[in-house]
Image 1 (cartoon, rainbow, N blue to C red):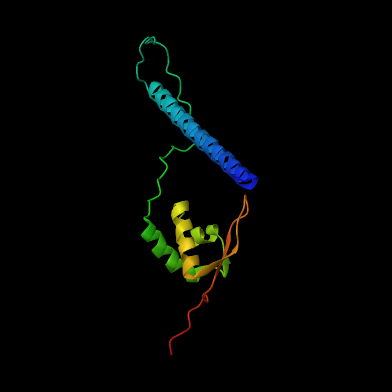
Image 2 (cartoon, rainbow, N blue to C red):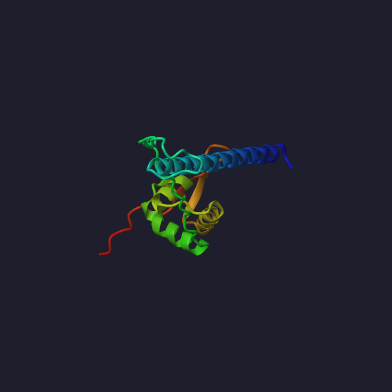
Length: 160
């Protein structure tokens, strides 16, 4: 293993760690919002005149506290539909004429309207490079994206 490979793998591990931490924090925040929602709903039910165990019957019921205006009911995150390699390949081929002359993986995702699996998209782009439909202009490294260039004109010639 060269020093460059070592540094690359170390950066990848650090990126994966940060992504995992962000995912864990997002899950924690969702759980806190759900717990807060349950707490507020129970407080509302208690304030509507429901008799609680151990509460004296003669005590006046406290008015329910309104929920904060900015809080929304947490919804389950939608899982994106997993697309097969052949579906991604077909979608990329259809999107190729709509891409700018030079483009990155991010441009492909924007044009597709979804983000396919990274490995599948990488293989599709590598296949297009091997077939000569696109070529690799600049290899990415670290935070710098790989730049591809189309070999075909963006507007197909009109049939006469």
